[in-house]
Length: 438
Image (tube, rainbow, N blue to C red):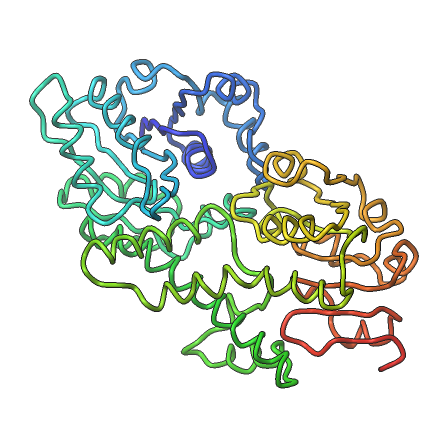
């Protein structure tokens, strides 16, 4: 099919590249002309495993194009995919200004039979507003066909997830549109669930809300484990073996971040308030997550008494490994709190340092290697479980640190390994390890 994708951010670019890889002719549209020029040259603006290689391959094969010209980009398209950002407003609701700006541009140039597919995460009922908005701004009388097709991609593995998804959700009140979008995704050989517009929108929010709930749930129990002498690793394993619960998203840590979970929880909580139904469970999920990195900072402060003039090595800045995304990363509030307490921060991240400069305090030192970050630091704080960090050997920590102390916000290392390491080791929801106390 001939497809246009509006927006070349994380969702839009991955969607466009992967649709091209599966045989569609794809034109990606973005108003950022500098970004378009980079994409036309084969450079990906985001760090995502395997994305740039597929981008270059499909550019070379002429199956993928990029433009800032809506008229050119939307000409003769069977499907137009909207994948613009829907960031969070101050009140927690979704900012739909970019979405409706895209709708107005679509209305001017789309063909009457073109199907609009919404990939952006939007509040319940938004796709009906999209339909109305396009019809209202179209210069000709037409009935817009709108399909909700939410994405379920994990940053760091988005390309893999696109080709290996558990399901594809498509919702519409137009059966012909459902059939066409089903055919668009048929080459992926992934189960397709067809439903109505509002149910498709709700599935996206419910999925992310449930996963976020599991993370805050296990972190709540991790905090209790520390106080009563239990081990959250064993608790996670024990409950995860129950098929009704499942083992995924039960790893204790410094909390979730990124562009999806925080924003989507705020949006659905806002929707609940608007509908007269407070989402009490999800409000608690937010509360637990917001305090999780604070608890780690408090643990560090309690250990040292005062952080004034202490040099602290922070390993990992991105909200998760495999991405350079700093949005809502737990490293942000934790580092700010330590800086406010007078600490000097040396930070290492293999991908996110360039983005971190824009959101972290200005006087942070960015190291090019783990060893450089650790050199003569009072302790190490692990905030992202990058492979490089997980494979770093205890002897190397001891070699570079002024004091062999680690605060592990991602539980990267087995306790048994650390008991014989000669390192003072503090993790999340597990008993601390002290040298000579094996």
